[in-house]
Image (cartoon, rainbow, N blue to C red; front, side, top):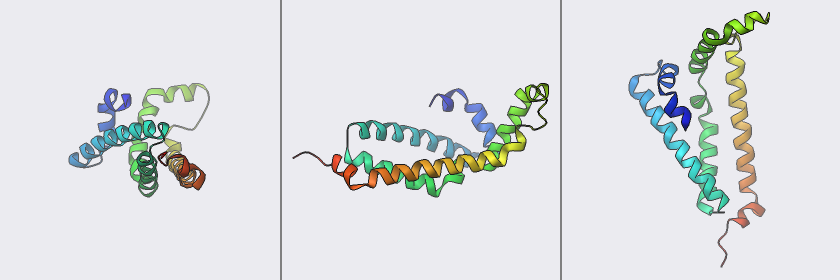
Length: 138
């Protein structure tokens, strides 16, 4: 959540390729998703069935919209920023690659990482032995 507050101008820069209304919508949706995620985490610790179901729904939503979460244009702007800020370090170390040269692999790795994480999450929380732990004690 700190990143959304502290880096709001940088966030706006990364998503500047979007129409202004869509960028603002995406920004507030990011806030909503983090708040819901925090509440779901607390609910999972308390073994609340509704938290388990919402967590699974968030996982399905994330898998279906993973590229919306990790769009190439935003990554490209971020790696260009890193080149400007820290590219000289790579040059000093004799590394011919730039941060921008790994933009596509970074997007792919982030997308695959999210898909794997949420697939494992969904699998775990849909197992009958785990579901039974979330049933109310009568």
